Image (tube, helix red, strand yellow):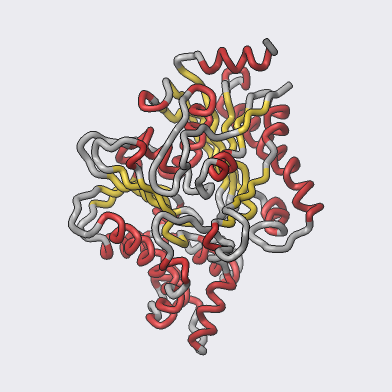
Length: 398
């Protein structure tokens, strides 16, 4: 047996593994690094978060990524060189984090790397051509493995698509393994660049779990703030939006896209929801608004599309508790809107069930890495895979 396979076999048979989950989302704000201790796999999984850090992307790194991010036409050379280069940046961030935490790389069994999404193309974006859904992430797993000395699992979304899904959302797997409850009906809402939710009815099986994107989370608000408020990366706490007034005609124009009439479950990205989307919605009105009024309207746009999606799936009569994670939960105005729009749902932070909100997605990928090595094939409902499958490609350090 090859020594690498022998080592992987030994890791798979350990009762407990140390796994690092890596996540960088569409906001391009940095790399989330979660060091987890994971016992078991599948329905017996137990996870504890040992360490967590978000390493901010430098302006130079972010500028490089923006040359290829969510654009229909890019330089193939730039895309080619960024794939290994960004992997080395991520590896350096991991090595530095381990040094900070006083953890030797030899103590870590696996790294589970989401990579950086460059383009996400669900079938709804190209309904009339012969191609199926597709999603492209860069950050090469081999480079991370060699540079850290740790076996790396990466490129999770390709298997999801190959098995009949759309590459997103993948959160339902970790949501189920971490958060399923015998007696409480739960909604897990993550408000990142794009907002997505998972429905976990009490005592349900993985096959019964439902997950879908709702539309924009922070992506439009962040993009607009960066464009028109110099030096600001986002509208902290929703303060700017709170100083403006919601414009109902603009709100209805924003909500008129055909994406919102596509049946659930569905997935989308900033390929649709970007600055051009806002400009086109404003042009349809023929009037210009103050930047504060636009941000106020974008904030309500996110809140309404989230609440309408949830109500459409669960109805307004069922009893649910919703646990929120992601950067959007720090936007106080957005949270106020959601509480007003979902009065029958109890809204809490995911911290209430032991999950650090900002670390959740990195933890979820640590779980997927653990399942790839020590678990069994996963089959889920909704727009998930049509066959039982595991996700992720394995890279060895030597």
